[in-house]
Length: 265
Image 1 (tube, rainbow, N blue to C red):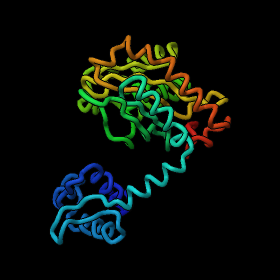
Image 2: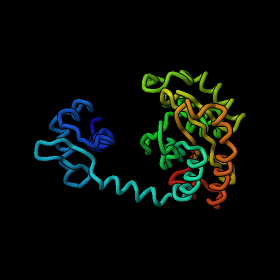
Image 3: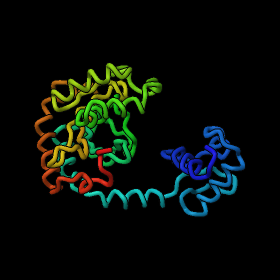
Image 4: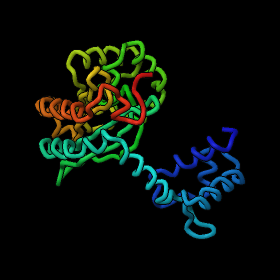
């Protein structure tokens, strides 16, 4: 990273989720940047209100301004607003976490969720994360709506070099990913167990516009001990019904009417 803009975004991304703040030296080390350059970037972000510092020598954390911008942006994406009551219903029906993901700039992003579990084990990860396509039900469901070559290109772009960060199951190379993808196309949904995180199961279905373009994905996730394959498959009719309702509520054959970016690239 040689120019200021990529460095600035790298700093912002590093601070995501670090509510306690991160010392200047740690930020510079983790990003392999000179401490002086890192300090300049952070000082400018503090001045702009995107980062806060706890005292003159304190740690750095993201400020609420960037969160406010993100929430305002999400509020203007129709599909997110339309999905809320349907996510609530799926969460209540399943007793698990119901989520919506939408494509953006060539990636699939989790943007909305409703937690159905009120006690006991709960699976409730952060929203706003880009999805590892070959290791998630949502990712495989989205890929299953594409021509095989396009799906293969997207899988190859993410690669398999970081599998130590994910669960023990699931595809470990392109060939196994495409084999699983063929099964997902045939079924019309994807069920995974311990592919993204150990002990977590997920089932997902696509949301298609009237011209059959996938504009999002609905998923239900929870502990594998509760969300067994049999239990998950029993939820598919309700999920497909919610997906069809969202497609109808969108009222357009264009995916741009649902999201900020078309999925077709």
